[in-house]
Length: 600
Ligand code: AGP
Image (cartoon, rainbow, N blue to C red; front, side):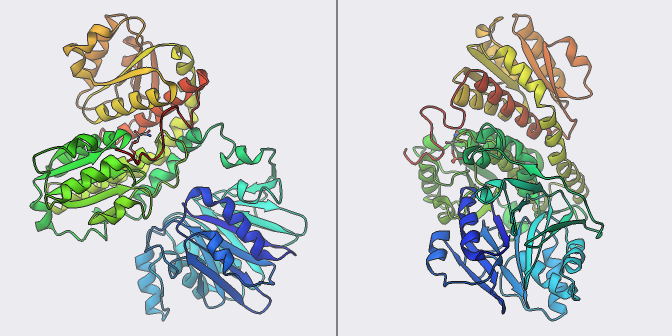
């Protein structure tokens, strides 16, 4: 995920910018750059690769005001031209987030005579600000941002003037004495100050050495409170959360949005995957898809099976990568390899095996430039930002979103889904980030539930259809970080064996949100209740009936049946987290596990 740094003060800006960017390295990036005003003009230094390399090539830069950036490529390759800052005239810009309507804006600007050198959406912003500039940088930034649809944290430099703004992408202002800072997060500048102002959506800051003035997007001054940070550096990197896993669970409203931003058009009922380049005829020829993956990514793949079969009418086989590589039958004509790290040896081996049959290949991954990305025909990034906790959380929900978009895209191309239905599904999708936020706000209920059951030795998670992969994922998460034995089952399968294990000592988490199989899941709940199992139901917030049959209800906002598994996912993640915390487990680094499994 990109990172922003900015400095306006009396010291040399460049070393401070480089130092701040290094502290943002943990977010992941593929290129970096700075722009400094050296009392004559803005000088830009940027390149692909590591900040240390950029630093080595820097001359002695005298200016005391500048902006910097680490880029995690979304629009355009990770190279020097696409690296930030981007300039237009004497204006330099760094940007995090995605400008969804950048194509439309670009066409407008090209028509007005602007020349584009990069493939990025950010360059649009630089030209747009230049276009509106009439001797007032703040007002030019406001006008430009009013034209933008999407998310942004942005820092703009012109001469000694610096303006910052945000919408749905984090940005903080650090207050010093005779110097002020901006950054994507607190740790980046914690070395220089402990006094911070946390910017809210649609706010702008004019950053001078001796003061910072805040405005809303309509130029109305805004009063901001100063937050004094007393975290140590380690706590700061976790933004005050006790663990990276909890931080990453809480980042999901943003990461989910990032996974679909710029890839949907509700107005036209369209899904946009520019790089895919598939025609309707080509998609019609795909009669079978094979998904290959491991662990959490495999669970995402199973969710993908339900999606592709339901929305695009394409049969999907979900293959455990470590098994598939020994298979003797050919995969489908299209193979989707899912891997958050892009380095999993089992998945790579299976991918190579699939390619030997001549199948087309798509990777769904989170890491730019990972090995897997170099071996497939097409890459769809999940854009979750770096995930530090070994247990995958936000990368999983982003995988679900990407598979949802792919299934809609294929369904539209092969004529299995109407434009109107896509419009409705996009509309439901856009509500998910806010619905996830509501679940996170109610996390106390989940914590209480975890407290009640943390001493159990065995757990069951059950669900049907779209919720079955989430039951598997709930069990996997609990196993990984709390070391409790847990099984995920298709609810209808319990009676074919595992019911023998159910007793008063085996809590059952039943995903019972409303949908086609709701009544059947309720029947399965009654089966386990009849064997004295304590039942925790994950149910819609307006489902009063369910309370009669279960011991605890964790409520989620009512959502489309296909999308509500995303909401249930957040609940099972929180549940695992709080159980593990009750048991004092090493949450971010569970025993025996690694973030990237590069051995077969
Ligand atoms: C997830 O919590 C686990 N750490 C693990 O199951 C993981 O999903 C699996 O190893 C696959 O990793 P990948 O997505 O990086 O390929």
